[in-house]
Image (cartoon, rainbow, N blue to C red; front, top):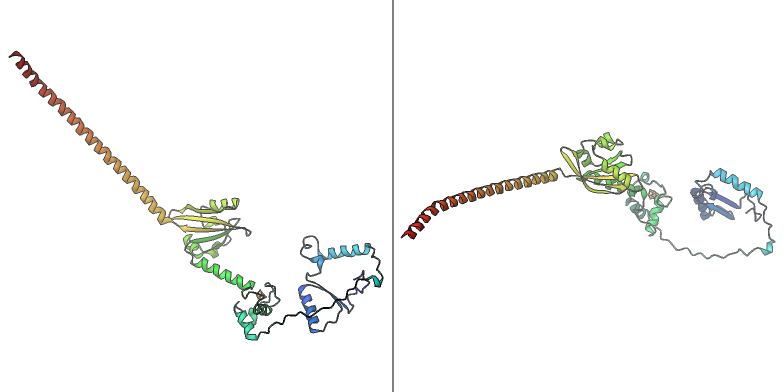
Length: 324
Ligand code: SF4
């Protein structure tokens, strides 16, 4: 504006320069109502303008950036202003292309808000997280087909938390959430029962407080690779099958422990029975072999004796036959 030799005084009535969403909305409201008569309006969504935009934030403070720009402007020689007649034609005619939008009554708006648990004015947080300044505006946008009814961040968060709580309350497997320092962050009711503790008492404490064996969690932390169905003896009376997965982007790990003590004991009993049966079978076979050998030995001895006993008369008979 300065280059165009326009009045840059912020007190000038014909020019409005503002920054920040609320201030911009305020200016637009004034224009819409016809109460603001400025000729030129400069609206900047970021508080403080472009020098405080998202890309600038990490570099320096808004005031240092402003100071540097002012210094630059003071050093810079203004470009000579072209004669008025050489200016481009900047007139433009606009046609009102406004699409007529339907009006909605109070009950329709309230019905939409009830879908995201907004029953009273206190429920309307007007946080702006959905992109609309107020819950009411968002409800109207929903009625116009421009927004999803459930696109309310606090509502979705509450819903996700309640669903998560249901899972944590009813799942029969123990669920543990620990941070990368292996400190307990969350646990299900079944985990409390399985590990004999109360979450309130162990929250934030080292995992080893409730689990004597935490090697697999440490491995997942180091490798960022999940572990599936690994059997671990946690206590004399507790054997679990554990699955541990890293929660990427949140520095957390989720552990699911399944009590397999009965199954492992049955397997151990079956193995014991199998070995005992094998051992007994081998013993029976060994005894049978010994009996067979003894029988064979007796048969051999008897045969030899019979042979000796019969060979003598036979030789006598042979001798008699030769003499006659
Ligand atoms: S996100 Fe939800 S609470 Fe926040 S303004 Fe939008 S509708 Fe209202």
